[in-house]
Image (cartoon, rainbow, N blue to C red; front, side):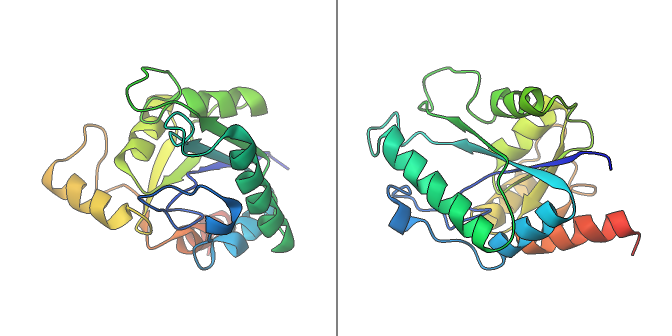
Length: 191
């Protein structure tokens, strides 16, 4: 079986986002259907990677041990739903740090590609923000937009100020990760 890869943003795609940041495992709340969607992708043979900006580290809102505990909680919840997370790539930097990894730069996605030894052509990158879509384009992957999290605002922004390279006529747009997963798996089965 051909190895398949999918890359997901975390906040707003898998779990509810917060303007105050997710600072503890008990603040992490999955979006309805997201854990089951990851389980369906895992069971269909997908490797699941997460690419997440975590500037709360640079801002001193939480430390690495706390972030690791949040991600362990995420992994446990996904495992309990019948899925798995194969890799988490994270940017610990702030918006003004000038790093290569913070989305919209492609560094996190390129790290994932290197980890799996895969080319990102045809790899869906599912996000809820412009920076997710921009990072996907910069890495040569396929941007997909979900309307959960900041997705509605992102779609409105793209309609009023189009992004170079992002064609709203061809951009896959879904209500949430569950709907995106259904569409992806249906396209594989030809239904």
